[in-house]
Image (cartoon, rainbow, N blue to C red; front, top):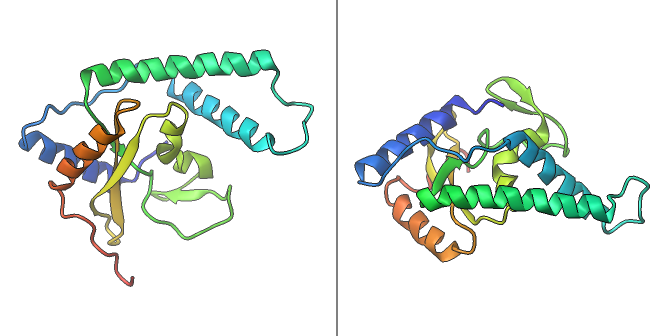
Length: 182
């Protein structure tokens, strides 16, 4: 999926500021199947939303659910190995800046391309599957003056450490700038 060019540029600029401040910066991700991770998250959302309804014919079996939990554990372990080498992952909070409210499921334009609703929101949801803490800090504005956020992600169960990193990294930015007309 495509990221907004403004967001990509802001993330690159923010990474440069982190580098200049003296931290180790690099482009790195765990080597696993991100599409499979996103599909598994989608399965969990579907199952959890169905949990409050009458059982459906296509509800998962216990074996299916336990297999999904094992796959989730594999993704958790892959991210934990990643965080063995890196203190914080810096990534886009969203694929686009603020958009007009719409019906859930309605595509969202990202750089002129109609992007499926949940795909456009996937950066903000990704770590709900693995339970890694995340925080968002403002890092700039897009060409329309709307705020761009960087999502900072850390090791599981190290929420306070991530918040301390977010506080330190936020000092490298201009902070929140009110969008025009608000």
